[in-house]
Length: 217
Ligand code: SAM
Image (cartoon, rainbow, N blue to C red; front, side, top):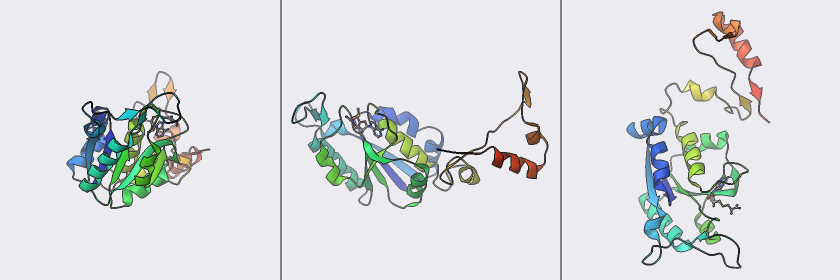
């Protein structure tokens, strides 16, 4: 069973996502387990402080190293072979081919979610991979961690209903976007489903789908 641990100041943000739909099913079927590690529990001093001002000046606060190191140590005790992944706009851009690779390895992952202006850079000494989900800045690493976990878990064999559905979807070959799809009714507010899809001619349908798949940029 693959274990996904997330170090975060806001575990409640992940609870809904990880306990719904395919993520819930994957847990129920014993294919994955999730553990949320609250960084606040490793805070410094009586106020359990997790952040402080940056050396050299500048706006905002950074996550301090001591709580981050202690939380990673705890996560490694739970799962010694797990790889540590840091959510950061400076990381390697996430993509479907990497999600597929990660779904096939037999070790777990520990995600570190940054907050505020980021984290003390010394944490990178514990990190195996730095990942970004795109060229924009979010408030914290929780949404990136959820996006990555979802994209990996749904590709673990047995999670999706039909294994084929992951084979033919967008980016499965690294670049092609899936063809448009329709369901009942065949006509809705003067909008008709393309005739070929109603024809029952499987060869023509396959040809139409191929022609209507797009290459991504
Ligand atoms: N000051 C940082 C900068 O300019 O790069 C941004 C910090 S951001 C407000 C807080 C945290 O959110 C980051 O440390 C990171 O963990 C996470 N984050 C924000 N955008 C992200 C992205 N595109 N991919 C991955 N993580 C991101």
